[in-house]
Image 1: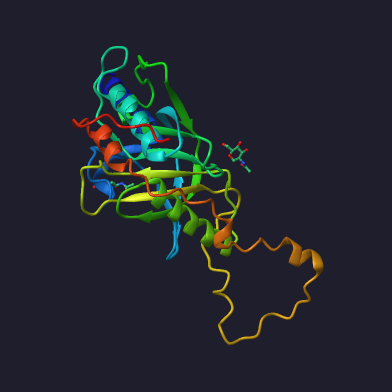
Image 2 (image 1 turned 30 degrees about the vertical axis):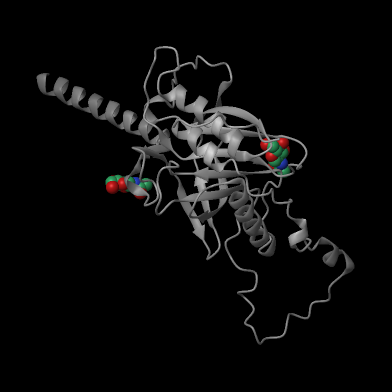
Length: 285
Ligand SMILES: *[C@@H]1O[C@H](CO)[C@@H](O)[C@H](O)[C@H]1NC(C)=O
Ligand SMILES: *[C@@H]1O[C@H](CO)[C@@H](O)[C@H](O)[C@H]1NC(C)=O
């Protein structure tokens, strides 16, 4: 009887442990930063599975996650992002019900609409991933400009680059990525991309940033030119008019959104990020 009771309680505990392990695994999409070489400045980072990789991009799978977000309307990403960044930073450093202090978790995500016009401010949204401990029950923000974003499970095409994430570099790398995705005929959502930053503005070396496009449908990681060796003639299947019509348009430089001029606001943005003193930042226009 005693033995049976013991066995039962051992099994019960094993069951509970297994259950807990499952629960932890289910929201293990934000985790310790030891696994990624570019996640160096925060204790936790968003986790992912690498699906495949080419010389030009990676395909990654992300599990559903919860983020704290805020929007910024601005002519230049730098200024909008700096204001939004401050609000998010205040939230994690105690501007929430209960005054909870959270560790900053990487990366910072900026959702960038594709068709911004020079003469209209664009709506950017900035998000921080909630640390693993607050994924389920994040404290309520005291600032009503903050909200939570439930990021669905998704596959993304990723291009990485160093240096600073400015609207110019972000758009340049977004353009290079879309050019490549067009070439390999990958389908993705064309209406926006994410600018993804892993480093604080104070880090000077080995900075890591990314551009993401959300994949749509079948994932492409093979080069359409690869199966045909360079000297074999192209297959001689007749090309019907509908085939040639369905060819995706080739991307040329003129298809890309106009690159905004280099902003003189960078220094100002960095000052806002880091709360350092200086003359007031003038509005962009
Ligand atoms: C992350 O790193 C830890 C320890 O370095 C390791 O045990 C774990 O398997 C890694 N997880 C992934 C998903 O690579
Ligand atoms: C692309 O994203 C936008 C904005 O999130 C959404 O409204 C739209 O339905 C998406 N398009 C496709 C093809 O999934």
